[in-house]
Structure formats: structure tokens, C-alpha cells
Image 1: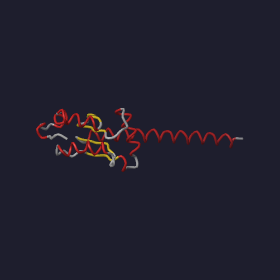
Image 2: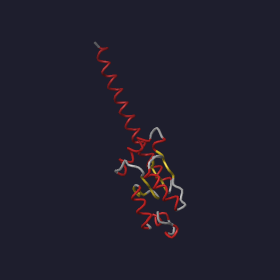
Image 3: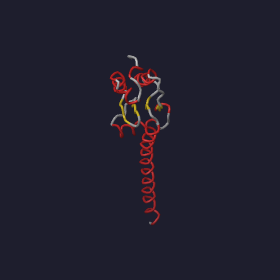
Image 4: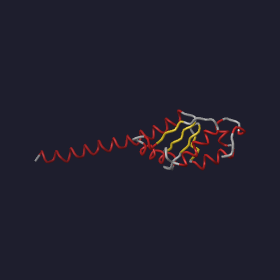
Length: 133
């Protein structure tokens, strides 16, 4: 009789351990995003094949600025990072662009900031260094 009571107890322990590790894995992705964004002046969470991501990266090429790019499709934990972005900024779509720790937005937001001069201001460069896209 004691043996049959042990099996459900072991199952409960295993489920608890699994849930703990799953929560910590998600939390570590949030921590990864926060650490990455705070460690680099320009960060783009991207997917290598995405035309909108290529467009956003092109803006920084025009400005002769090199962003720190995380290609989510080239990482095993890319889905978890994308979920963490959704949790942190309310969007899972890519690209997601950060300037000096501040969330700028996606491709359209980046283009708009570029064309209005806001991006140059955020980067501390003269808006005369940009060209129309």
C-alpha cells in the first residue's frame, strides 16, 4: 500500500520540477533581452529572411551605424526570446529595434524615426548624415 502512494508523490515532484525549469527558462529569456538591450547602443531582434528586418537593418547601414543583431531564426532559443519580447514590449513580431536601451519599435517605426530625424537625434548624429530611403 505504501508503494502505490509513493508513485503519485513522485509524479507531483517531477511535475513541480518541470514547471520550475520551464518558468526559469522563460525568465532567463526575458533577462537575456534586458541584458542585451542594456549592453549595446543599437539592438535589432530580427529574422535573417525577413524583408522588414532587412529594411530596418538597412537604415543603420545608411547611417554608418552597426547594430547588434540577434537573428532569432538562427538560434535554438529564438522562439523563447521572441516570447520574451512579446512580454516586454507587447509585440512578438520582428524586427524589434532598441536604441540606447529604449524600445523604438518595428520596421515602420524605425523608418518613420529615420525620416523625421528622431533616429539621428537618438543616436546623437547630425540628421544631415542621412539620405531618403
